[in-house]
Length: 213
Image (cartoon, rainbow, N blue to C red):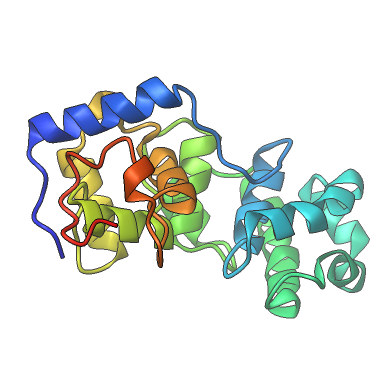
């Protein structure tokens, strides 16, 4: 685990990210809060590209909790069977759709606690929805964010919650709305797990990673 980058260095890092990509976007396709919630729940242990391929047809026929229940679990499975853990995920999507109708008037709730009550929705999924749909500066820590946070010194922590807290506590607030998106994209395309592209990295001079390639 790296040391924590100081404030001035964090300012430099996120100014660089902002200059290169002022409005970073999540890569999961969605049309409303419900389809975003479902897409993120389906993306656990799956690629965004794989989820997008599966949900293209699904969301064309079921973009609300009511339509998803009308579709039914068996038909849902047919749409998402190319995604890992599809049976368990289909069961959770049906259950969370019913809970949204029963407890939240068919609407996706805007609190972390309410979101985490839904079947198959953990803290990371809740934070993605809070950030992307409700524009709250929640930090969703996936494997990319965890790796980049620790490797670079941007947000070191022993577990996902510690990295989330390190981002919230240390990254200047003007960058927090987009912070986890910048870190995800940086980890996905530049600071990759096995062969980080350090020679192409725009923050290599600030990064604390000792084994730069």
